[in-house]
Image (cartoon, one colour):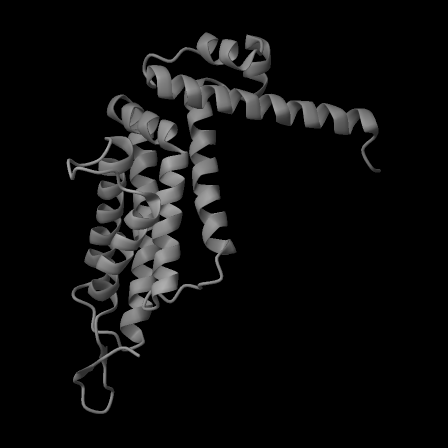
Length: 221
């Protein structure tokens, strides 16, 4: 039996309240940090009652988990919408992955910082952070193994290269987005940042393709 207008309206209102609370939590985390943030700060920022908060979340840790899920979902959606595909030996595909990480890191910086704070004090969040990194490593490792199996001479073990790839992305984003950049005498735009990372990674990851008849490297077409 289809839901009536009243049920649809209540669901829409609940979704709006949840979204308002998450947006408010992001602002509070950005302003005060995770440890200093209070539920009352979030509800005041969202112009919602404490009762409405607890209908959606058990506490600020629950809000943070929801925000992190949104971050991962946005990154996945951006990659899925890009027509470049998964072949990281092709620059458009590699650039799409770098761009998705860069864009979503910037968009979700408050919760990324909050996760770092929470992980220092709470083992559960430390485990969540490790799980997110391990999932990213596993995905990148599979892509690199596909490159190796297609004949590309990788500069190292796919598992180790995946770690280096993710560390470079994370460190570069932290330096330029979270920490305000390096003293190079000018700002770094998104386009230049993404292009620089992509081009630097392109040669190191794909390398020259091996000629299957001779075993010697040959230039990529």
